[in-house]
Length: 331
Image (cartoon, rainbow, N blue to C red):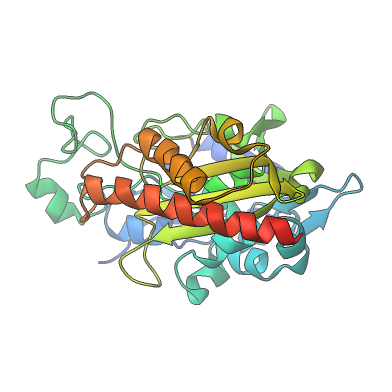
């Protein structure tokens, strides 16, 4: 499938990029690594008049430890760089584990942390060729007015399938967003709407420029577990991130994030209350899995059944909690 015609813009600063976006609202798409945008353009999901290539903006790259013990990560930092960062592996291991599962090594060399945060939501009815989508009458998310996942509903149920956001949620991450009015910082948990169509709170003319991880989150050990059909390339069909802090063999604090089973990545509520002050065992890990499965709402957005994906959230959460407890207890 060929790309539609477009004009490529190559800004050299954030200010220039924001200006380009502001002048071309509605007719422009942002290119970071291109691993999601380019295939979508080939499928005619996007046919912008302009593509804004951010790769010439050096200030958006790099992993920069801060004096307070936290770290800032530029939005154009590749997933491969995050995966290989010794600093992040020591201080924020759940993030490096999640980054290491994204797609394949070749794609991680191109894909960026900002792109993974802003990843378009996915659905069996949406991520197809123009001919295929036309034959189905299109859908709410693109060119139509029907959600094939939930017929009769007014909400798009396309799922968010990024691997790093659940890990970042566990780390209480913030993101910086640049716009014509200046820069603002928000908690990542406030970035997603829970609607598959308008899935992020990013205004026209705005860019995600960096990720900020706070110093207290460096005390957490963590793991990431991912369900996919193939061992490489594939997006998650269910993903679980666990970040845990232990003291004398007992849980001091714990956070669990899930992805690919809702229109947004989510933190599982009630987990800290369930596990805090206790030594993790099979029963407690199973109870945590039940909490995660309870908020999972996988519908028919992929080839695997919703029931199977919800059960895998339960199973993967149990396994991840047990694994995280072992790691955290050793540190």
